[in-house]
Image 1 (cartoon, rainbow, N blue to C red):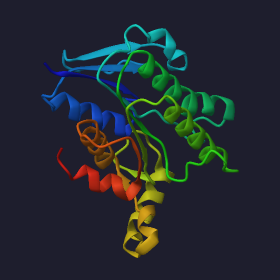
Image 2: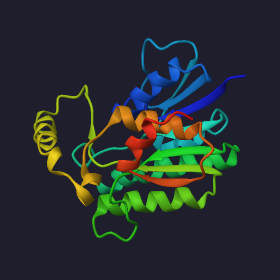
Image 3: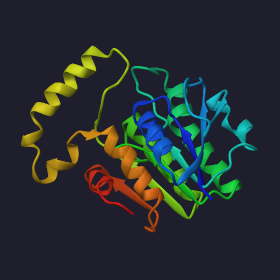
Length: 221
């Protein structure tokens, strides 16, 4: 009997890669997407639940499965209002974790960020850190928090400035040695694969740093 996976954020870069990996993975019989907009052209194994993600609790009855992959995240540029930003980057993952606990889902994976720290003076880092704390407080047996550095990959959005910045950053990657290795760009492909590998592993709950993500992505469980 195949597993049921829940994905939050399947329209984003990492979430979309994850979705298509799980579609091809025979271990997964059903994939449930919770999103504010529908993705067209998906196979029957994918069930889509469309609605207000800021009110995720309304999906409680349908929020059942074996594993939750939370790939939700926004940026200061997309969401300049700090209150709205926190509702997305803190509120959605925390609500998802609470629903997972209530519905006895024992595996929860969430993408956070390098530098996450609940005591940080930087709003972005503090929000991610507070999210991590709340998620861990749910005591879901298999909880994995991924902390990637800058995420690389082919985005559909026309973000010229960001693309130029990433291109320059990639050029100087060879200079990142020693303690600087953790700042190297991590490809969304590696993050998605690491999430799947962790979900199918027997390892205990943990926080996974950016350099560790790439390592886990290459290991089969």
